[in-house]
Length: 449
Image 1 (tube, rainbow, N blue to C red):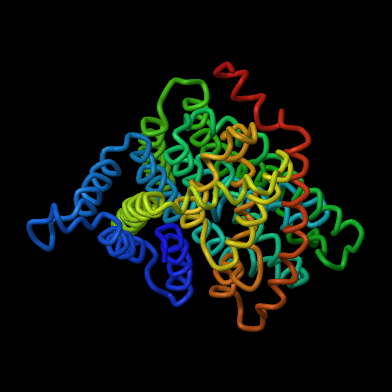
Image 2: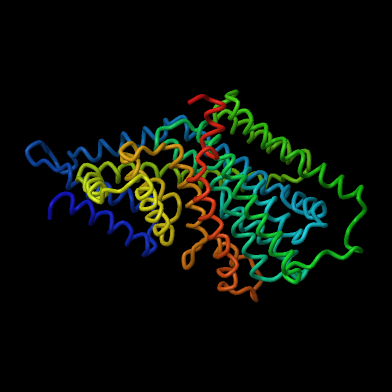
């Protein structure tokens, strides 16, 4: 076998190992070291068995990850999200928005979407958002007589908005890989994120308007006085919104780096939880533990993926794929369709972390050839990755929800409820391609071209 063929075999073996259930980060490390030992093997220059450049590369990659300023924001944003989650602030938020939107068709679904969007902005952790909303909003909607598919679909789709809406962890990771400004990337994601959430909301309200039996309106006797509604909204939505918009505003206005703003957000989350008197010592320890656990996973994914990618490129894998794509003589549209179709298909067996860290770097060197802005490409990828959590049979959002849903909610019902949102995501991607100003206007306005 030639070196490029070994590189392709390496890539296929990685996907096979992941499908078998091996831990992704350590699979990357093991395969990077194993194939790297072969790639860098030089018998004439080796004094002993461990005298191989792959070990030097692994150490350098580990140091680079740990000293990366952009990645400092990851644990801080995670901590902010976990504190908000553990402090039961989201419970109050959903209840107040539900009461405020009671006159809209599908008011509980609208409240679930808004809560998902706000909470996703605070945490960016898909599993946490879907699981929490499954425990909080799903029982309330089922009790109110909502259709099972209608209720489960909106929670799964809304919970995935954290991939796109800043301060998304995925955007931080992409900015580090693509070596572009996280500030510009956050600005580029604002309008597409709000647009997608708005399209979800239009669908939810439209379905409930056309078929009111899907989402019965609340009974008048269940609605508290207007003063109580306003007070609940004031004490739940406003403080959390102020915290989130101050953090994002500081980033977008250039007043703070993402790491600095994330530090302010983490401190603000603690203050907010203290004001509500809802954060115990046990919950704080849980938030710290989960932050450390998730941050370690992200760091090891970076170390493993950079080692894997370096070996894959050294063996000629990147060049082989690059030549294959160029040989197809694609237009810009054809290249984007091909890249997004591959990412869409990879979303079935893989999560966004592997796709962003392993496969997206394969396409990044090709962007100048097809005159594609890496900022624009990143937002298309972020939109596309919504589908990686929503596409059966490996729709992780559905499995997260099934884990906390009542036993009578079937997995196939959740899958059927998700399907319309897949079409909405594809429509959003088409809209973004045809109107690139949705992505590029705000970063150009704030930071110049």
